[in-house]
Length: 245
Image (cartoon, rainbow, N blue to C red; front, side, top):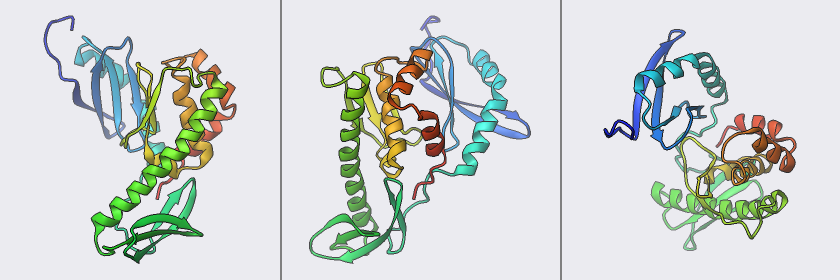
């Protein structure tokens, strides 16, 4: 860095606004400008260029306090993330925007599948939370791989970043994001996204694919996004209101 001193990659800051304490996770990286984000789980992050003083950055963040508070209140009303699972029969699970009732079945043949309105877990250990959790998570991850791979192929071709494009994609559970795209062209998708409606999944994938053409949210980026998903604004609003189960 310019001052020659080491600085933590991530620091926690907070300030008061409208009678509320707002906590911000400040992350320093090799970038040109400050980007403030409010995430569905109520986390506020600030991606900051290296070398900027913490005092100056906090002052800049304070200037955005009205917008930050508005986003926090919006996400609080949607509550998009699920409560911890017990994996008992009768619990509600989601897949592609539809709800299914969990049914735990004692069986020598282990596996998970959808049958009608039910999400069936066949297991030799019907009383084990760990066993049921492992089966369900494996099924969701494999289903996400299948659903995402097909949409990536379709949308990348539509956008003009098809088979010849030098990019990879992967699954990774993330607390704050549905997806991301690195500077090296690696797209990361949250497997939890497979629980959302297909239109929302396509929006997220299209969004990340457009970053292969434009890394930042420029006018050119939104032109590309509108080309692939003309109604992306409606899909984003729908995704913001998704309550996962």
